[in-house]
Image (cartoon, rainbow, N blue to C red; front, side, top):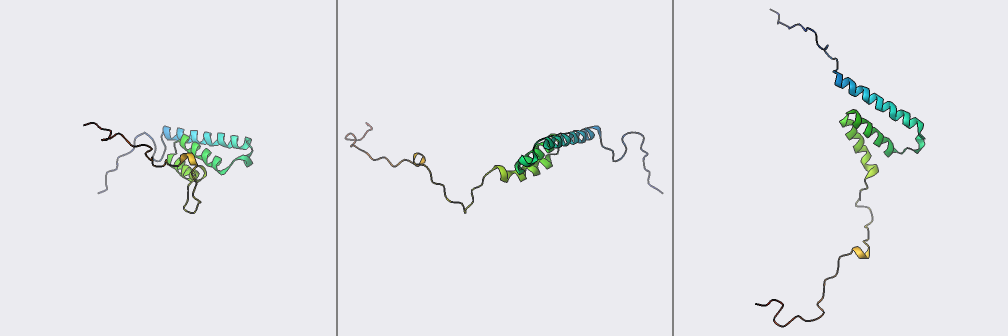
Length: 117
């Protein structure tokens, strides 16, 4: 005996995306075209690697591709945040940022101490 398989009657076909997904894809393509047009208008030699990664991150985030935005942000970190390494020279603090010296008393206190009993 063969298993009973219900027949599909109407609705979305298998594998077809819903309207929200198609709209996100359309917006993503529009953002990509806009960024490409803007990049072609600008002098591409003036763009740094950080600018390109920042544009990719914004494009992915606006289109809803948060995983792609996260990857672009991770690649962008070395360009935007400095990191002190153990091999770098120690930085000397200016005199006004050094800790104060311990205070030395310049005259004796009252006899019997300051607190009256």
